[in-house]
Length: 459
Image (tube, rainbow, N blue to C red):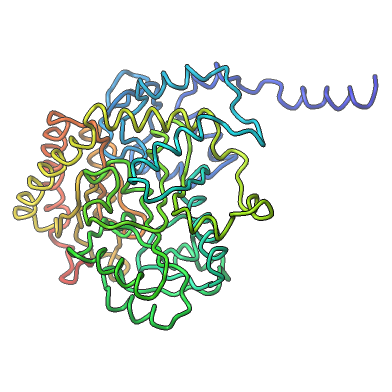
């Protein structure tokens, strides 16, 4: 036997007895947890067990998941906003079947599906943003924007907002707003400056220094706790950026694709960005895809020559299946009035939650737009002066255990319960959620009564 055949035999021996895809389909939660703990992240398994997510989910459709025993669970998290069309949207899956035999990745080839999806996105920005770069995630879209703006202008300083979340790769983390995620990886990108979110005057003061290339901001800050700025903030930001010749990057990874009742959240303020970032539901949660859109003249300054056109590329960006999913997702959002449903259902849900807030002392604030909603819960006394997120985590656990509802808190503010159901959610699901939340908050009042602190979290 040759050495080469010996190596192949060794590979076969190493995977002997490991599960095939068919085998994995029959795994119990304990099987999955054992492998995940051993080879991925044991602490995520601990968190799942603590919350009660120790289930084997075998089926998903629309707003619901089903476990191995046939019990249904209502999803009010939707993959942190990745499932705007719900689980397994039929028309997106059909699009993938239509391209299953088409080349998925063929380098140096103008993929027609990438071109078609780019055309959709450009048309939907009324041709204001004429060039598109495809990647695989929101943080990659942010990285693309960083490189684009620096290459186009020659300036270096990136300005971002306190509480921001733009991803966890090195560049995007450098312009995100929570030190907890940044400190272990320092030093990050130099030449960044931070301003308070919602404070146009503070932004103007920083941009007057003349060294900024771009200001990156979320129209609504998701992970900071669903922070909605005051009316007129984004218009002021657009005006200030224009005055100082600074590019405006809008991160709509969470707010985009209909989440706030418009296809893009910036449409509420009747402004236009210089750079737009999309991901999550662009691929309907079925295929990973991110996109950076920008104006033709900006792209041309950065990459507009044969020498510069390959400075920033992505192996998987713009692949056939991801772009086919994106085309089908956009067509479904628009043709089936999903965006209108997000606006109307969100307005109903927020109005009901505001009434509920008046009845429960543990519910400190309700805010949001469309079906991007956050509720600030009180903090509790504990071993530490204030236990961040303790009550929110308790509520998440109870919603799941008592009512089979999937939810979570926000990453940069653990005291905020996130409400982000699929945009196809109906009144039946909304009423079920509200009744369940009321039941849990009644218990939370008793649970927290003796431990509430006077100084609650920032609302």
